[in-house]
Amino acid sequence: MPLETPSRVVQALTARGYNAEREAVTLITDADSPALALEAAIESTPESTLVLTTDHVRSVLAETPAADPKAVSTDGAETTAAPATADATTATAETVPETAETVPETAAPATGDPSVSTATAPGQSGDSTRTAPVETEGSSRVGSRTPNPPGIGNDVTGRSTGTGEYDEFVRVFRDRYDRLAGQLRGRVNHRPAEAIQEMPGGSEAELIGLVNDIRSTASGHWLIELEDTTGTFPCLVMKDRDIADLVDELLLDECIAVQGTLADDAGILFVDAIHFPDVPRTYRPSTADREVEAALISDVHVGSQEFMADAWHRFADWLHTEEAERVEYLLVAGDMVEGVGVYPNQDEELDVVDIYDQYERFAEYLKEVPGDMEIVMIPGNHDAVRLAEPQPGFDEELRDIMSAHDPQISGNPSMVDVEGVSILMYHGVSLDEVIAELPEEKASYDEPHRAMYQLLKKRHVAPQYGGHTRIAPEEKDYLVMDEVPDVFHTGHVHKLGWGKYHNVLAVNSGCWQAQTDFQKSVNIDPDAGFAPILELDTLDMTVRKFT
Image (tube, rainbow, N blue to C red; front, side, top):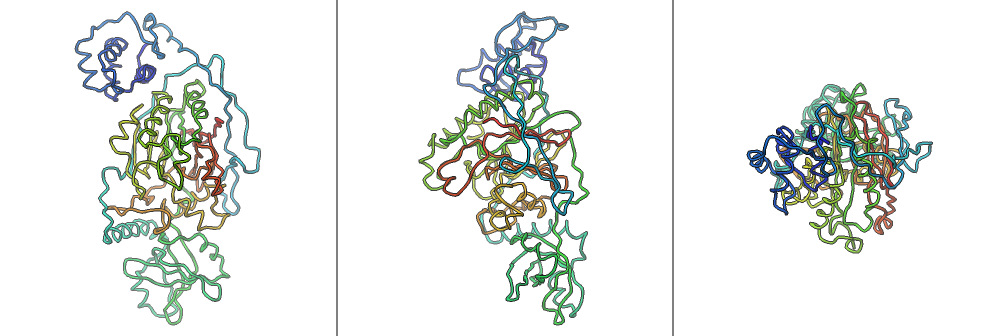
């Protein structure tokens, strides 16, 4: 097959076990004879080299003749070159070993809020699955993907300055308050806490603050202490008010606004309304201007004895078929490997005990992904980065190990622009806290997307400080959602769930690890071997099963 496009050059390189810098691929593609340029670059490359550099290719091109009687097929075999007007050579067919299933989105409005749609995930009621066999005879590997490099925003990588000093924590919480209060000021006429303290009893007042404390009174009412940059003020929510249910959704340190009336002695505010920063109900997401798809996965956990290698092989093989030709992006939301020392007695459940060997093994699995796909990866709590969020991306040593396909590696969380669609990628450690603190009907492991709705409502991916989620102080709070994402993608809880909240698609993509003994001990029943496939031009989604 003639190497007339960068994607074909990449695929030819991948078939031979090589990767290349982007500019190097461009130089090969633009050569008078791309096939000869590729052959010359590979032949002159040292055996230990995995990535062809731009400088190396440039030096080879200076010595390469202008004509070449042969072309290189995408599987690495030499074939007779065809005239430019001839049809392209068909790549060798390869089979997918087992059938994959497709789980389409089945949305249903949530009670009382028609703008919130949910989806039936595995284990939920509803007829949500249909079988769609993957072609096994005549299905061929494809090489016509033309992805655009994703844009990365809100990435702490290379910008981390925090040392853990007290003043730094004060600074980051002040930044959180300022930015989230800015989102709320259009709905309330905020007065500082110290100004409200000077107002006469019976006055109407409106306040924006971080939740400093929540407690119930002897009469069953709720007392919420809000803090702004000037001080704190107590706010009382009566148990018989409709807004009392909203108190169940509150987390410490999140930012809210309240409206109400001061008591006669002006010492407390009786709350009539509670406002969250929230996603506007009128929000309309952006979509791609062409038919293109992205695979959303997380929690691969290579190195675990329970890593599902067979499911991964089926997934990677499917990506090479014509059916998956429009899947041009792979977004991985953390936990590439199982890690070491993450939980008690983990060493007894490891297949690979050295952390660097785990990443080497993951890199081998990553090579199975088509070379003409764009890959974006962020770390998770099992990865070899700091546990405190925001997490910077992997260091240079690990990046070199995982250099197959030159993936874009970003911090956790990051806002990723894919074909004009903004996708907020967050590993999801705070989901444990949200699920533990909120009522089951509002957040549960069986429906992880509902816990994600709460984070969208709060416009912060990890609002509560001092619990299980470790927070690192930085120059700014990287965990605030300044902009509304079109898609919110998480992992961590090993459960599959998706739905729409105010037109934002929330997806928790499950995992690639079967149940471990530790997971059994804490009642985690994982949804493993699934790959949500997102149509970027419509934001419709189906889920393919590879187990």
